Length: 281
Image 1: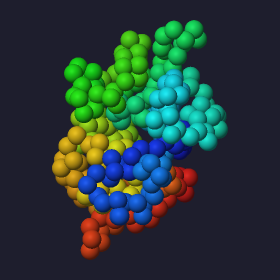
Image 2: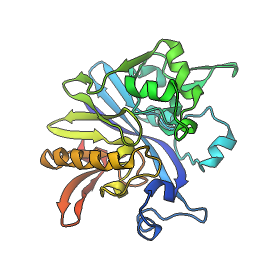
Image 3: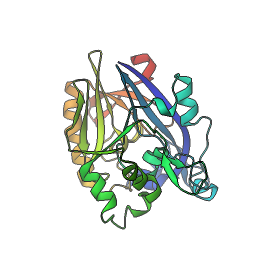
């Protein structure tokens, strides 16, 4: 098995929304806001080479939205998904499996692209199976709640189903002995967190339960979460195992820190070592 960080650029989100009830006087020291109160965040994905399988976990904002949409989020693209994959020697057609942690637009926007005539959509990964938690699929598509509805864009979601490439999987699904998924329900219902057993180490793609190293303290929960108290409980439970088994956390949105380990302090769970994925691999 080989692991690769796949960078797809950066975007900005409101700092208060990203840190919830935590005062700006605290969070602004961690990720300083601009004059519009916006903070910069990464759109970082993970590529797993595992024998004949090539797994991509999440795929960023994609390229099909208009400039007005991207302008809301101050997207900056020092690189793209296509370029990052090419740097590793791969094209979209090489991906065999796309694991979507959840269906918010910043996690699955790259799943679908315009067709050649730009009059409809097609999947960006023509040879891949797209894996989504069955509970989350229903949550996002049957009757999305008013709080999250703007994050579930039809053009990101339904073309996957229409293509026949969608696989809805139950909670706790295992792809192999080295790759399974944990589930969290605080940020959204049925969010998948891939857990990778890699050369005796355990790496967890913690997605939006812990979007950055700044969010490691239990009370640092996003205002976007539909059940913030549940997120706090899930973090506490997750940390028990993460500390005892020395998990390495992989961050999707931290603009600087790719990975970290954890430690217990007198103030609670905190970051121990900050790491690059290539240092682990």
